[in-house]
Image (cartoon, rainbow, N blue to C red; front, side):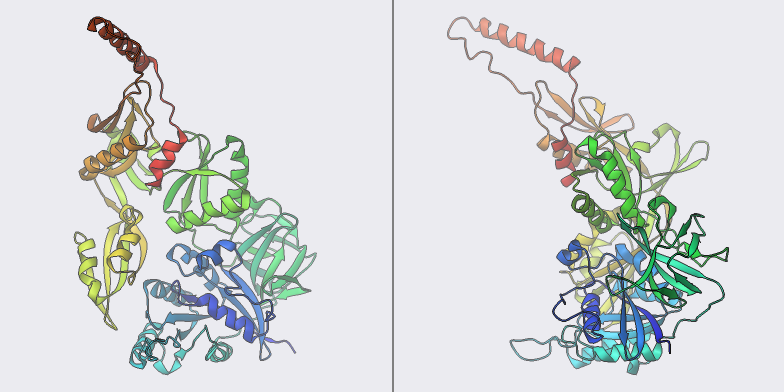
Length: 594
């Protein structure tokens, strides 16, 4: 008799205990030997365990009470919400986890909305009920508070309060109840054996096996040596191996409808595969894929050693294989040399990708300052998207400029409401009560302000108690200008940026002052200028290095010294006319680190 299958994932806000709950599931189902168990077992990358956050979704197969449980552990950070949406397309149930001390947070609501859109059965769970103040022996979180959180999560998930399960993932209290609820409430997958087709929800690249596709089989059976093709790329191949996750890859005879597993496709060219594609044995109606993830933050990546350009390209191609939100294109116009302009979902996403390139490919990289996209409508009413300051058109050709606008949602305790309202004073945020002495602030804000360390400012003004979520909703007209930085009269695009016209003077002044403090003195005076259009709006001068040419002159008439000094000035004037400034890389680094 075939075992029943349940496919589910764990979703929540960051730091609410997803990975710890996944550890308890692995222990209870005896999937992992106790001697091999370690905290955050499903966080496979070193960088995940070091930071204590989940970056990549990770599937695992477990067996419990005669059922096969396919679980996907998902990230909680807003930058990786695309990973959550991919998981939800491959499962029928979701455990919605909420920290009892923090309650519902911004990303909790965002993930819950994704689950509702996919019509996934939600099992609400309140975690960390074991929080005890060791000094007094009393509960740091009262029972009344726990009941309020349960009521809140039940209302958000559209279930009865009695259905909410209270657990401690750390100690294992009531975790077994969650497994039983999954078996009882999550529907088994529908089994269709008429048409062989599977949805690719992730990839892994193995240097020996090639592309390994993580799939959810929606119809038929797949086994070794089956000839299949990918409907999107029309690539035809023969399956080299099939199997499941335990959580390591474990080969088996076949994968059938309803199961989650992997297919070794025997494809070495990563350009031929795409997440969201359908694997089939014949021409069938493709499965609904995923919305294309759109990069919103752009940075230039440049190898320290120009000979590493091909290695950087290879690394980006391999990372893009299981991270479709990453985009890149070659860049050669920068002062930093040849490299790539890369697109990311946020600053944390960018930081993780750069760190992985350094670790996994042993690359020494330089990065440009992060930038966002703008729309420019020229005098002939042609619209173009500008994601790099290098592509900004001449001011005389611009009719209108627009910037990206975000819908920002902040959840915070009421005592910090005044501080956050001051942070958003010009945005006129709407205030709603969430209960539990907490409020939701909603407003629209330019995306460039989110990128300007807004999250750090929010955490500072609320002592770390606020959480935020945002999504880009469109473009809004804004008076944007290109702030150019000139060094010795020559424009240095690496330091130029796009700013609001009203803020250009303050930004320009700050940049040239910073540049003056890190620029190395030359043999002649070097003017540092900030320019908008044809107007210089800020200036500093790096004074020349000077040799004491009068040191060897003792006594005599003062005109001898004047003659030598005059000769030195003439020499420096000639140097200034002929001299060329080559920007040292350490100066560029120091500017971008600010």
